[in-house]
Amino acid sequence: MSLRQACRTLSLSRTVYFYQPDTRRDEPVICAQTEQAERYPPYGFKKLFRLLRRQGNTWNHKRVHRIYCLLKLNFRRRGKQRLPVRNPAPLVTPEALNQS
Image (cartoon, rainbow, N blue to C red; front, top):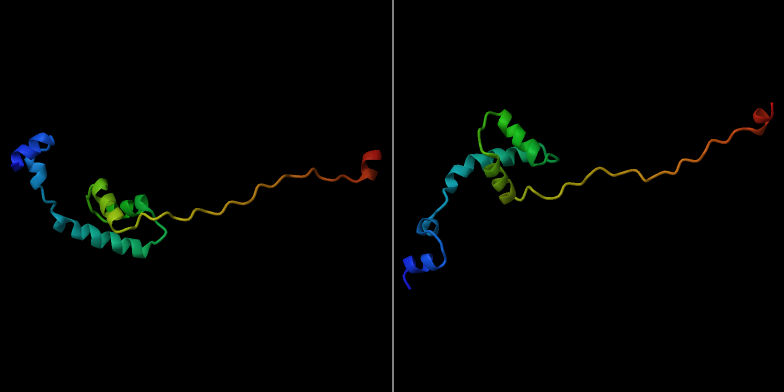
């Protein structure tokens, strides 16, 4: 079966089949993200993206998030520990003050 026929049966465009992503454009994004992630380890994606934007980079958030996930920076961050629920007890009043 020819490539043309195979693409037609799969309803796939031949341009999609031959598409090669240009990964060289991602190198500056990778460098900037690793640098910021090392500098600010507790920051998540949103804060790191804002930092990159403040530096003057105009990268798309979808592209930056794709690279963020490729670098395995999207691990689950530990949340703040919550205090246990406390049941308030009523204040004890002295008996002598109540009788007067």
